[in-house]
Length: 340
Image: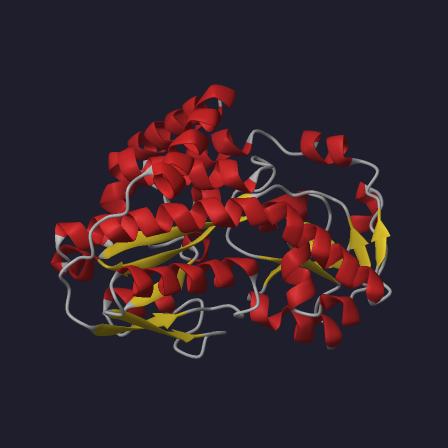
């Protein structure tokens, strides 16, 4: 795994720093409507803005992007269809939110306790999109094409009471998303409640949730400290995050030099985002402490990891039950190879 990761990092660095700039493409001026489910304050959102601004600069102002934040152009559950239908030019889509339409693509976006480095999860996801025919076919069937990927640093708990040991989870109502986090929390004796990120604060405030499940940075952005002052260091793993997609028809309509420019700009942006994960988490902790958050050291991380089975194997079994066995075996084999 180390050699593969080093090679990926070296490749990204060459593209981002050492490669010659592509010539300005011959593309007509246009305005993109970018539908986003989250706040513009999130680090990944800032990376989206950086991508858009860089693309605008590289095209001599031809590409102007208008962002519609926090679901103002469509909710988390609506953005896939809005993107496919070209009601938005770009949609920020988390595949794990669409288990019916994107069961294969959602693997790295929704499987907990498997990856602990967001950059690694991002790179594996990018490689699957680039090389695995089953992932490619699923995206094509849904009429979408990825143009920019993100990562999610380790997800932890922010609660109304301290979580130091596994027994402290018993009976807590915890925010979850996707299919696999609910399974894990049920195994641990908690009550999973799938909740959109933008609804977490109000859900804790009115008492329908006891804990947020977010990265430390996201918890800081959404002011979770005001309603959940105990932040446990428990680690449920990192994820490949949402991706920015355009309709396949839109991607196919772009000239090759513009497609190449988009890909180069995405690589530069992703490399920058990876460099920001640790500083953003450190800054978020400092902000939280200034709001009287108490950081609670979780004492049973290894016991947590030992309490769940190999989730890659479990995911493969579930996909086989959906008549997606060949696809699942291919994807899991690729993931394990890339993790070695």
